Every structure is written in structure tokens, then in C-alpha cells.
Length: 196
Image (spheres, rainbow, N blue to C red):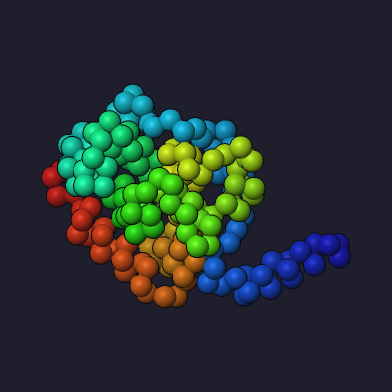
């Protein structure tokens, strides 16, 4: 009983200490299971992509916009299929995820922040130890996107659909406007899909 009371007090106290820093917040058991058992470095296959894609025009439209960041067509299409698949799977707008990636890493697969966040979506390594498996590599395409989309979905649910607050939590800057505004600007200008 004392351990439970201590754990609750510790959890409450730690939420105040880490208010504006990215940190672990417990995910639902089914989310942990999905990350643990369904991640790989493989891009989403054409079959997986086609099973959820409503219109392949999205792929062509986004591919043209992404070309300056990823000149190789095969790499670019693998990347976009995976973004679309993982974002849609998590109930997120793929253009939002492209915006987050552009702001977080500039589409650099091996980006590492000063805080140690890794890959396209700048996932903090502590997520691997608490919701994943020790052999998960955050520089792998699908692994990084699976983690990033799952974490952002978690924060969006926690904030009752408030994108501003969810993005602030994702970036560890809750309450500050600069990061969410950067993402919103990219989402509405660069990645807005007007072709569909």
C-alpha cells in the first residue's frame, strides 16, 4: 500500500518537474504491444499502402514536393508510402506528419538533436526502453515513423484533440507557441494537399 501511495506521489511530482521536457508518459498496453511486435525497417509495401490509400494522386503530389529533400525516386516513394501508412494507421493526417518531420529533422534519416532525439521524427531514446524493445533502432524508417506517430497520437488523445498542446508535448515545449506554429505553417502551406 505504501509503495502504491509513493508511486502516485512520485508520478504527480515528476509531472511538475518535467513540464516542458519530452519525457515518458505511460501508453496503453495495446499501443505498447503494437510497437513491440509490428515494427521493422521496411517501407510500407504497395499492398499495405493500396489497402488504405484512397487516391494515389496523394503519392504523386507529395513526391513532387519532397523531391528537393529526397532526390532519389525509389527512396522518396518508399518514404511517402510509409508516412501515409503509419500516419493513417495512427489516425493522423499524413500531411501533418510530413510537417512534423520537416520541422524536426529536415527529412534527415540520421538526425540527432542536442537532447539525443533520433531520426526523421526525432524520437527520444527513452521511448524504446519503456514501450518498445531494446533491439528497436530509431534510425530505421518504419520504426521511427511508427514510434513518432504513436507518440503524437498519444499526446493528441491526452489533449482531447488539441493539436497545439499535443505538438507542444511532442516537442517538449508545452505552452510555447513557436514549435506548434512552425508545424501548422508547414501543414497549411508546403504540405496542404490541394490536388485531391
